[in-house]
Image (cartoon, rainbow, N blue to C red):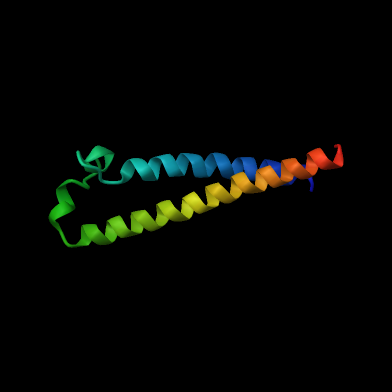
Length: 86
């Protein structure tokens, strides 16, 4: 595989890592966490907050899957490079 594949995977890995950290910090925890700083704690009694939490969960899972695929892709690329002797 060409080297641009590795650079693309590394770039995606960095972007998804930052997004994953931000999305996890936005989740509502026991004490509110960072989500209460952005208004999540104020609107927790409203009916729309459950939809927002479900969407946040979906985005977190989607970004997590892309993050995992990047790690697997980099591992496979590295294995191919090691076996070809390049």
